[in-house]
Image (cartoon, rainbow, N blue to C red; front, side):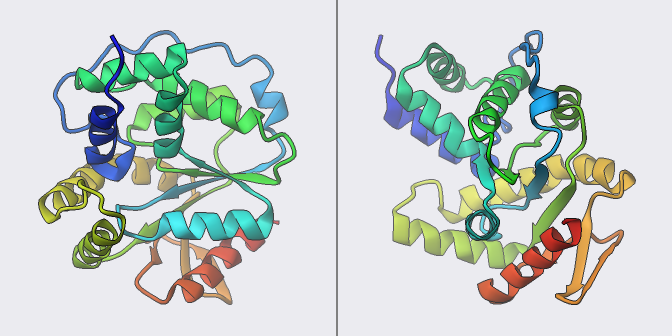
Length: 247
C-alpha cells in the first residue's frame, strides 16, 4: 500500500526537535544489531566532527549552514536525512515510514547507518557538523564505537524558552508549518530539555562542551552554551572562534 507522505511529514515535523522521531510516544521498537561499518573509522579519523545541539528555534540550523559554507564542512541534519529517505522510496525509507506511522522510534542502528552513509559520501569534506543526532545517551556512545572516536567538540546553542517559542512561531507563519503552533513548540522544548540533560553531562565529563565568553576568549567551562539571542552575525563570530580553536 502506498505511503501517505503527508502523514509521514506530520509525524516527522511534529516530533520534538524535528528529528527525535516518536520521542513523545511510549512505544519503542527493539534496536536491531548494529550494521557493519567496516572501514568507517579509518576513513573518518581525520576530519573534524562537531556535534551541534540546541532546542527548536535556537538558530543552530542557520549557523550550521554558515559554518559549512565558510569552512567547507558537510552539514549532516538528521531530520532532513530522514525526510529525504522517505521520499526516495528505498527499502530503508519504507521501513522508516512504517515505523513512524506506527508511532515507533526509528532504531539507533538505522539512524547511524544513514549518518555514516552520508558522511562517507563526502570524503573530501574538511569536517562534519552533525545536527540534532543525539537524543539518547546510547546513541552518543554507539556513534563513538562505530566511528572510532568522540567528536572534536560539542557546540550547544541556548536561548530562553520564550525566545525560542517566538522564533518558532514566526517561522511557522513564514513557512506555514503546521507543527509550529505554540502548544507543539512548548512540548518539543520540554522534551528537548529532558532528553538532553544526560547527554550534556556525558560530554561535559569528556571536556568536549565549549563555553564562549567573547570572540577573543574561548575556554572550556561547566556552562557550555552559546547564548543564541544576539544578532546572527555576532553568534556566527562566536561559532567561528570555536572552530578555529580546533585547527
